[in-house]
Image (cartoon, rainbow over all chains, first blue to last red):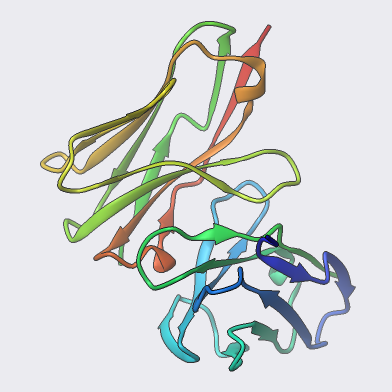
Length: 112
Length: 113
């Protein structure tokens, strides 16, 4: 049984560009959350989606947006990239909005 | 919003010794407290969790305690082994929605053989 898969695993972008990160949850999982993990810090909550609706948003600027598709996969978009957006972006999924979240291995984004 | 503080930031122990990592939280509404282990370059993995209606939970060499009055919870690892070396994160979530967890900044545990 496949775990949470994220793509791409690594990417390098230039300041001002836009990026789209993708997440496929575990089969049967309907809730997806996105986190940003800056080196040396704990993950910081960005978004949560459940049943294709946004159910929570962390303290991030409007440059960050996300959506969830009918198959429960999700995309995270970041516009007008800044150097400070360089981080590991983690996706986690759960069958519901309660407990039991499983993390993917993340996408390492480097902004130069 | 919720704030989680974690101590110590680094911890070095000898193989076979015990390790304790402590976290405090600010929002009394938080009632779910998971602990994650993250090895270098890998994803965070849930190792144990506790809900606010329980004061202690144990799973083999790992235990977690919760003091709701003081708003702190701790991870205890006994008989440490070199493979326990990793970064450990505590987290807290309000209500039962673990998908919106607030994490501590992590503790780097090194177990020396």
